[in-house]
Length: 203
Image 1 (tube, rainbow, N blue to C red):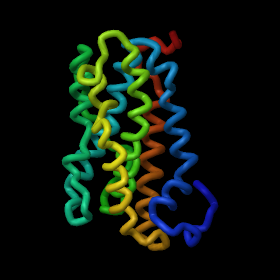
Image 2: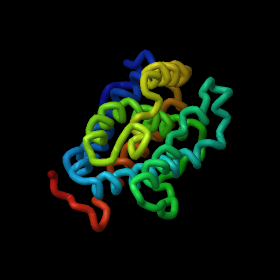
Image 3: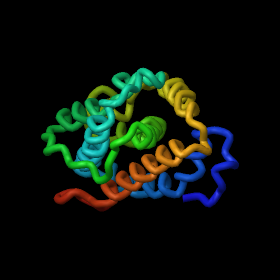
């Protein structure tokens, strides 16, 4: 976590971007681009881990009144695309894993959603790697990484606009930050562990 004082941030987005940066980078590093795209088997293992992370959190936070905050939550759900991709490459879905941290308040849920939404930006870059794998296309096996395509940037801007409704110096903002930190850490922990039976060597 950054040591920059919260009073230095004019917006909630800037607070989160700065104070969660090291956790964000750790989650990105855990993804292991070379390992995850070395084979279709490793890619499948990645999809399964991402599905567990996204599906469990989407299920946990969907109960909140996102419309009141100007967020169309159902439009932003992406775990079902991971499910499509997993089935498309011949795998089956395991039981949904339990959450590793509580999301019992709307503020914690906002922090979680910040991470989930932000991952859609990185997915656009990862898509290029996925499309190099045999049998993978935008609509078969890489639907999750394709996401909303050209609309991704505008959807992110809309989300940030709603997020900035929080006063970055408030107690609520501290809870949003905590939710983001916990979610980044959960991603880093889950993505760093290769699934059993995968080829962990880069091609």
